[in-house]
Image (cartoon, rainbow over all chains, first blue to last red; front, side, top):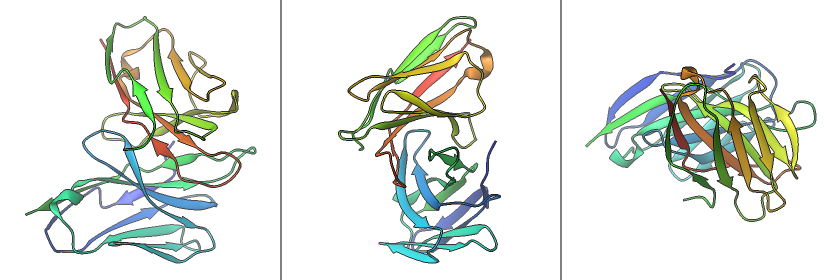
Length: 113
Length: 113
């Protein structure tokens, strides 16, 4: 089953614009991670935010986490055509002594030149 | 590019056959997780191996089985293939014992006909 749900399912913007993707989840988490996937290939880790953190930055990426609302957002500033990909949030909820990731269905981002 | 390699990259099998997929984890990583990603969906957790022992399992039937070797590489075996097993199979390695990011391979695209 999928814990997280990204919103929107698809997003189309022009180069230079900002892109915001949202993620909602259902259970308590240790941390939340965002991954990127190009054309059905492997996932690339973008950023990890722990449950006791509210905001984190990495280059053009900004992630926020609101554990009271069980939601997170990923902001990509000054987008480029190369940012075109699918973006997934994944929650890490430690269970039975091991840690694994539960992914949402993803947001497909298209950045046009 | 991560240090995680998967083989083969593509595979076509007939319903009822058996398949073995392979994954070499990133150097120093002792934990391997396998995920199944159907078209248009997020990855779903199959199982995880930590130091050669199965450490956790998702909602997949017993015909999905795995192994982890002393060098921490891993295999995913699927018996009695069904058409719905057609998917991208992703392997992710991580350093167990705490919360860390996962490094994904490029995946094996399995088509069952």
